[in-house]
Length: 169
Image (cartoon, rainbow, N blue to C red; front, side, top):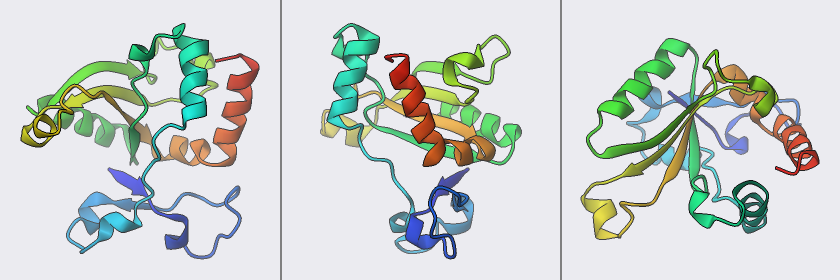
């Protein structure tokens, strides 16, 4: 899979709204010292959006909020995405809580304005998470194709937020 690079790591495109998201393959850089510093890591969901989602979507039930910490892995092909999903399913330290397959033929893409991904809610249970008391913390991992990652970023996400707010979601 691929991860997005920080903006200053992708030379030449100063206009964030029009540039393609620069990606790096894990297998190409995992051996480089401090390569993690070049990845654009997501922020924890902002408090304002967290409260908004809790009220609008979950009827004030905070236990339904499972995407406060989230990240995406981007793939060139569906086969690569499926391979990653299989690896996650086989990992003994990962407990999958839910899979939302927005690629499924039965999924109504109008609900996500045409956006497609596989969203996993999962817990990581190992010595480290148990030591820190985090073994029950649910995170979201989005597996998506590069084309959707490019649309999702910046201006595309801004349009999505506008539509979501009009629907009071």
